Picture: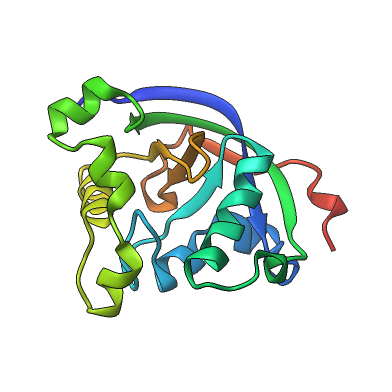
Length: 173
């Protein structure tokens, strides 16, 4: 696998309160069923998180803005911190990795995965995610909507020593 790294960090996930359960937050079932920027619909389990809490909320609002909806309607949200330890991560915010893979940051940013999915087509970023998943990557570090970073991981590829644990889980209702 090209230039994988290991990470130990805190990731943040923004969820509708209904789905703020350990199962819904960590299994990637919603991502598998509905798809997202880094995986096509009805494909493989994918958990979408951000590396800051403000980015997690910005990502939720960005989806509303894309469809011309009032971002205030994205609220309320539950934001959780997740302790993450992963061994095989591809960092697509690293220009050297993007050069090796032949994918520019501009092409990733311009990729309108939602429009392509409406036409039953796989987007560039979804193809990248699928290739990473199929080659055994555990996760991707990718650009976020606010110029910060997201962490997207594939629960089906987690190694035995890799972990994702919601902090303060007992405080969720």
